[in-house]
Image (cartoon, rainbow, N blue to C red; front, top):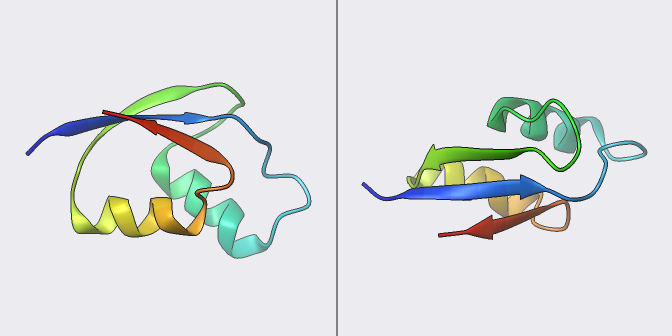
Length: 58
């Protein structure tokens, strides 16, 4: 499958616990961090929940 690059551009502070856990599950530990993940249904579902906090590059 294809990989996607994900960058966290907004903080998880003052967000719901579910959104904080989703960011942690994606692998983010700090701001402006870029990670690469396989593009699959689970990852895309998590991105849909925190789309206002991250940006996606292909």
